[in-house]
Length: 165
Image (cartoon, rainbow, N blue to C red):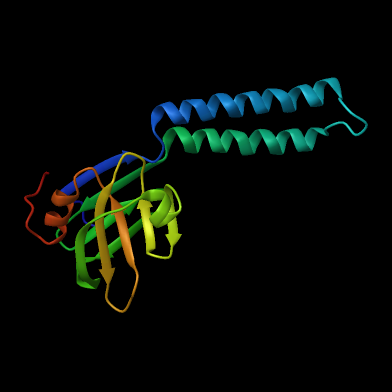
């Protein structure tokens, strides 16, 4: 990927900070419960150490994802880069059509995050009610990229932006 100036760049949290910290506290309480079950050997069949380690690793991974997961969108001269857990690059030559689109995250995509739904694929973040829907050549369903600045994103995709925005 070229490292030239981008026409558009935006980074958004996939989970709002307050919600992420609330989730971390809930998961910490669940972890404390699992540790108590192990330490005090509660019940007829107490929690084995391997189960505690698996639960701890899973909860730690959820906490890290909640705190650090982001949606990053950058538009360069000939491609769009969408980064979450992995990067997806869409060449502008693949695009058949793009437009600003409003959406309801729950109704249209079944929630927030990276969603595969009846309308297509969505990169949906809380707090955004609009985005840019991209239709690729040879595909019926679109890709929605949530944005707090959808008009600027659309302009950059269409090649009307100025580098550095």
